[in-house]
Length: 614
Image (cartoon, rainbow, N blue to C red; front, side, top):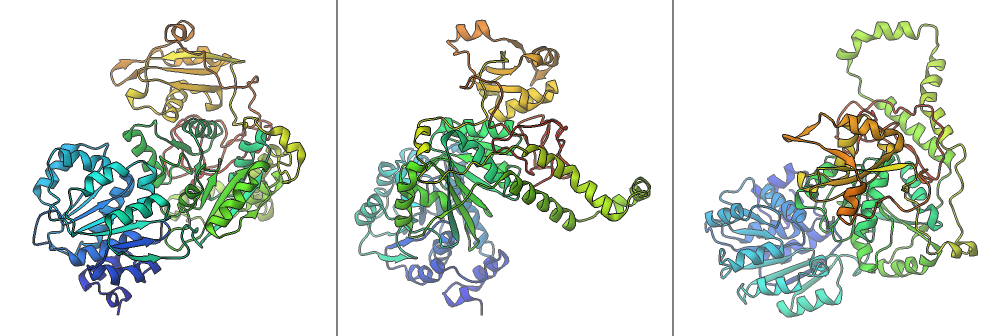
């Protein structure tokens, strides 16, 4: 018998979840489902993200509700659009063998008229973000007077995001005799307060110790000087060729700067922060879910409710101000029983914070060493060899080329071919890391204190050697900075490394290019149209003063990017597509100074450079 059947779930639902790969219930499901199926208790469930909470409340709801009736019987509130859509999709999948199950997702950033029409047609389960739900309630477009169950999912995140008043207003429209089920990763005072206010003698279930971290996650920290932080970060990434990670920064500005620097250095990365429109956010998240992005650089607020499978690493580029946010960050990896690694890059003054986090999550951090340049070369080389060994050969397509290939290699034996093939990559790696410095620093290195307050080197550059240009396209044309970088490079055939700061405004953009490339850029755009409009490029001087521009340019007094790195050859654009094919990187034989630089795989990027996939 299927283990879910023994919990009280009927066969048509069990069959549906079995097709989804559900074999055995997770601990939170095993403990909570029998309690919730009774329908007689308020409930508080404390468990980390990625432990199967959606099924823990979704399956009992499908058992308890009357789907012969078409009025709202259950309301699920969650913090973000992404989680709202995920929960809705999951419940629909659980119910695919049932009749007349109507689940509606209600969230901001989408057409409210469509959501109102779905509600009007009849719905039993409403999954909503608080802001949009309150908007619909204020329009008197939904009746919650017969709601039997309210689920508060990721309750701590909703309260951290400032939804307390919205939740109060929404719950005031529901019956007093409803059952409230609250799920949370942590139990701060605010969550305890909401449980006390809206629940009567709730059944409380805690998986592990309150506020603890996922047992499947390893925690590491690296101590570096401030000026080496970005270089160390890149070297950590390069040492993990198959990384698929989320990088957390403290501010929107830092998030954008790190993402831009990574893109210029050839990494498949993009930013997720509060200044993005919903459309831009959806675009970034789609690319990340499709694995066209290798690194998602995010703020805590922007990453709320992100549910992406198989995240291998969470990197804390900056530690969070609130310790509880570390739990949420690290919980993005090690989901659904898989393992993950959470990394913190710190200075010596932050060791106390690491110790505090250790006490809070009940797990000890491992102090790790920044890998040497040679270590990175070796790791990347054997990752490549492993991929070659396991690549699937398309016999039908390759067969026609075999005679020519064999003819080319006829004067080489097997060992010589292998050496030359490996050297195509390894020689470039060795050259790149030939002068790679040791970036490690001991926790008691007093010299480190003098680094306090230095800004970390992010591969940014100043005005020297660059010219600031104006373009009559901006964010209203649905450009992100990464898109704009790709647009510039694709139309001018210049390298992404030749582009400096991109200052994206609403209807126009300022951007910097190397002095030697200015004429090429102006000529390249002379005949370019965008959606029926001619693209206009001008020197920015007068326009800067007209608009109160700052003259731009990253901070720093050198156009040479000390933390720069070179990844993937002469890259031609910021926007990357998750294409197939890959190919080898073009290192062009240039010597590159290492402050932690590196290379890695990724999707095929528009604009000319070919690189292997993740």
